[in-house]
Image (tube, rainbow, N blue to C red; front, side, top):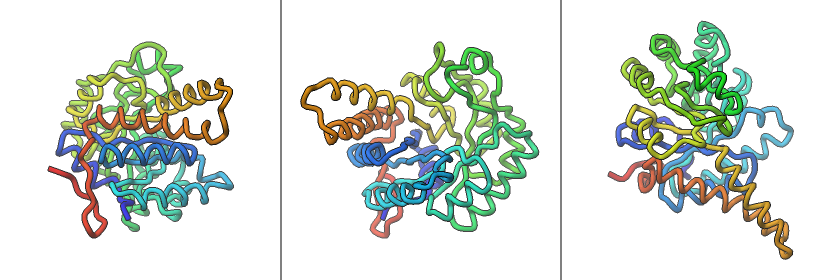
Length: 294
């Protein structure tokens, strides 16, 4: 089995100068495309499931499906709760077998974010799982011109240093100019800010809202200490476009339509794996533990 905590993989990525991709999905075909891309590129990777699954009636079944797919992979795969909305969501995810959780208290006052994150770290570490948290706030791309482009909500380096020291968190998502979804205007990364955060924080840094960035921006972020990059929007856009093209053919069937989701996810995942420098970085030892090629 190759379901592993993301923490060891992130440490190796930081030391090796590449980033581990985190690809989100909402269905089985997307998950299959992600796994296929990781296998094809021999890369470690993370499958992110959004926090709303903790409230869905079919959530447990979907989590177990994705977990089984990860366990059957021949490369290291982590299963992460993405943007965990509460302590309860994170604990439920751990009980369902997630390898790691991301708690998002970025909208809370700093002291409250620290207090909640500490509790989640304690619970996760008790069962061998890692925790990612967010400081600063990565908003939505459709509002980018009113916040990200103006530097609003960016991570404060001094607060990051205190946050990491007091929570014991394993990875930190930072706000340096990215946004979720499609951007209004061109994304701009505050690389000087990233360097200051890196100088104060020793754990792996995470970049959310990676869709829409250029390859040079990814490389600059990785060189600045980012070891995990989250991608979803570009996967969804390609899957949608392929579905629409296939639906326009007279011979389209349900199976041919579903195949477009898997193929769209796989193509975009492979493209991002290559841009992140993660291709060829994953192996599995005989005992099922993850390892990296030199």
